[in-house]
Image (tube, rainbow, N blue to C red):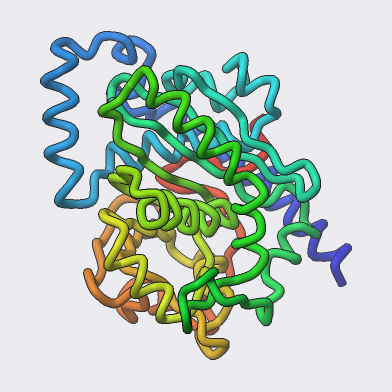
Amino acid sequence: MFSHFAFFVSHALLLISLQAHCFEISTVNNEDSPSVWYSFGDESAAKSNWRQTTTDRYNESLAFYLARITSASYCSASTILQWNCLPCFLVAPLQSRKVVVDPKNDFQGIVGYSSHHDAIIISYRGSIDIQNWIDDFTFVQKKEYKNLPNVLVHEVFYRLYQEVAKQVVASVQDIRKEHKEAIILVTGHSMGGAVALICAFELSVLRALNVQAVYTFGQPRVGNFAFAELMQKNVPNLYRVTHNHDIVPHLPPTYLNFRHSAVEVFYDRYFQSHRVCSPIDGEDKTCSNACFPLGCNSIVDHLTYLNVTLGHVLC
């Protein structure tokens, strides 16, 4: 059964990569084109204006930028460090960048500095191979979160972050030596979105670092209701971007006591419109949950967000 499923996914990956890549080249946002990457004018004013507009509402320009960075996180460590992968060419390079790696689980992320945003960007990729994708959703594995009673999280996601946590914290501290006022933005796709959520929680709550926003794409459920509530109370500007009938945001299922945190931002099939969903209910039934249970079955929708291809197919 897995071989047939892997065959389907590999062809879906190829199709969506070709479609999305063609669309990206023809409709690339002018704000992210090479001609303006390095000409922001009054940089201090730009930073001030950006922070003001980001702290109180969903910022689609920021989401697009973070999706580009997350796309690059799927590429090899060597090409990321040189910033010469195909997704790298479509976004301004992060400064002081490092690749955090867990070779045992074939997992990695990027930590770097964006001068335009005066922000430390932390981005995590999702799964590379189909077996890894299947392993991501071993639903019954939950563990209590350190010394927090009744707070349960998916053990795989928790363990993945712990494997790279020291590298992430060290990279953040190194960048902060030069950029003391920099905020922290955390992002990720699929499994990487789940790790991003745990990362943001640990940095902001356990280490008292300035996590300003979290944007995830196609993120699965990470923990129980107590964890979702804890995230909403302690981590600002949580935005979980979903796309049409993407299957992954509906895993693991709620009947196993997994819950999403608010706020969901739901996009239609062609990203022509979006809806910022309930500010308090991460399981808003009028957004992506509206297609549940029979319609939420698309892997193709999972591999493209804001017309950015997310996966290793472009690397």
